[in-house]
Length: 115
Length: 113
Image 1 (cartoon, each protein chain N blue to C red):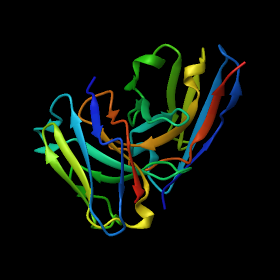
Image 2 (image 1 turned 90 degrees about the horizontal axis):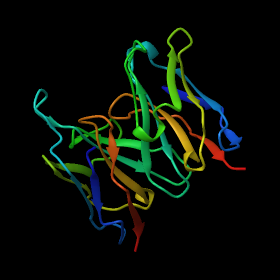
Image 3 (image 1 turned 30 degrees about the vertical axis):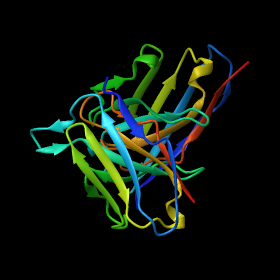
């Protein structure tokens, strides 16, 4: 059974930083694209970033470019999202997910940016 | 970016009746190399992550009931639930994965009438 278990998240002040983690099991992690997707409270889904299998190719939605960094550790079966310069509009539940289309999802973790 | 527009925003259907959700993309998502449309449908129930129902516009994921059918090509797609069950109450999203950034429709909330 594929499982993506997320950690990190919480309350942070505007301008602050946070790191999200996602640990995979039940699949050969190094063979899969990985993504972060977010959902603001009561709103729809927004793709945030992807990273390909070797960790070299990455892409971001324009609104987080230069502030967020996606990375992975294939030896640890783990995906990360380093979020710097956080803004109120970054408040959302963040999900990790595999591949395109997004076939396996983590449970989600809430990030709240507020003073 | 490709804009995905769903209609309606919400619909209420009686148990056992048909529900149809439409999705329109601002440009074609037909991937000629695969001869397929790069269009997916997701179901999201309250408090849960989304679940992939259909990929390539019409291919059901393993375990998805056959009352869920995806159709369409190019820029116009639909998801049909042939006989609505209580457990189908959810928000449904279409998504194109033809080109980055992959973009979602705004969602359609399906309820029981």
